[in-house]
Length: 346
Image (tube, rainbow, N blue to C red; front, top):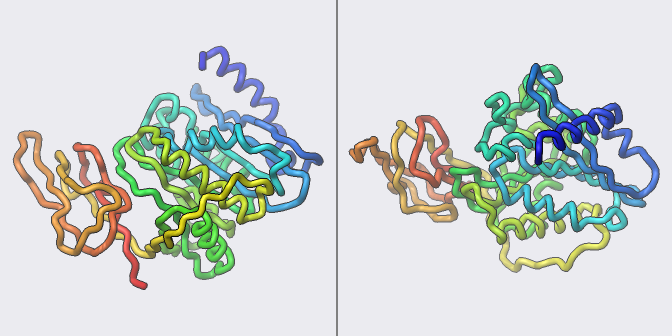
């Protein structure tokens, strides 16, 4: 998009900003409305695109956010296709869709961080109205999207350096069993083969950092899809995300004219524990393993060398489980997550 066109788009968005998402939802009728929230900080300027699709009948408000990390392409492309396919007359209740949350990272092809302020949006929640662009985006999503949601879905994938096994996940909030049960049921309906439950131990005043953890903290039914890897678009992962979203929308009662449901006869594998193996020291990482591989306790997962090829250290598993994601490119930096291994104690 040329700069002049972008500025025009931002100016249009500035006129729409006076109307909050809650006001749009309250409007009568069946409609789709594309809107833009402008973000300004000193000389830095960006925007947050939001689509609201309202059906004729009352129903839940189901929110979908893609592109928190702009280099995670399958979620973004899947949501682009969903925007072209879903019609207001097929919707019951309301859909709030953020097709690209981190526009600058997407346009600049920047892994993890927003190039305007070098901050990770998925480490910035609940955000700040007067902060940097990333803080402001997090604040808008917190107040305008999450606060108006009944169900909140965050869609991620493997970033530029991540080899990832597709899975759907949620936080096991013990003091909110109904939300947790619904998140699990929606996960099962997705037809994705792996379900991951994360422990939840946040207090009400601690920053959630992660977007769907923020929704969980606010008492919203929240979950996340993870599909895609290594900063490329894989059609099979785009299709998997779309099928999962359609299945969830049908299950929640938000989608009344579903596409043919693809049934997965395989019972999903459930993990309620995760072992995060950190990079012990910077260097070059070698491993023949990939996401989805089974590993055993004390297994050598790979090794790290220095820049001259001298072996520095083996990387060893502490648990039996399956690799959910790993660094899939050679360079590694101390304290990064090298492997996430999923397992279950049940």
